[in-house]
Image 1 (cartoon, rainbow, N blue to C red):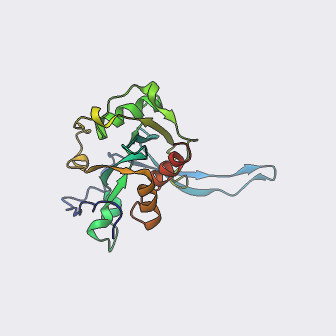
Image 2 (cartoon, one colour):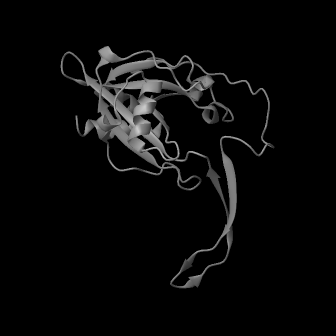
Image 3 (tube, rainbow, N blue to C red):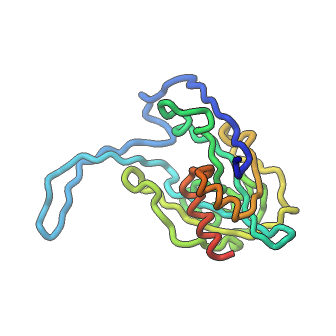
Amino acid sequence: MAILPELPKVVLDVVADRSDEREGFLSLQRQELALVGAAGRGRPFRYDMVLRRALDASIMAAHHLDPSGAPCVYLRSAVRPPAALRPGAEPAEGSFWEVPAGLIEPGEAPSAAAARELEEELGFKVDASAMQPLGPSVFPAPAMIGERHYFFHVRVDPETRTEPGGDGSPLEEAAHIVSVPLERALAACKAGEVADAKTELALRRLAEIV
């Protein structure tokens, strides 16, 4: 029996293949590099890296206590096209349960981005100063992108939640939002129902402090 509610089934229709266009959300930087150390300069090699205008991201664990005093955490369904379009992928493989997260705009503080994204994705309006660090930052995929994840947690009042406005992206339309006991969310991680790595890391870090 599933621990979390069933995720929405995802079917993506490829309307057009624009792979040959240079402008897009991501760009490829192809460099010829050489390692330089105590033994001298190594032989050159080619390396591909992914870039984007806003590189880093803030990850938020929004939590509250249920009537019994047990900690609960908010999760949100997300559609991830790279997973949905994997060869042989099933419809369910394109949807994930995640804690809210979003890119940090150039010049924006990670805590400010966390507060902005929390309102956009969950509907909670909090000040950036309410965002508490949740462990050190990490690099989720350093072999291909220099993106850094900054983790935060914040105590919220479920009574103050409003309908989130989102960021206008079709990927954020009709997202499902659930509040589940933290213990249950961690069990879902163990069972493979939470496949998003940053979400599991945030949940495990949260469990250490609440």
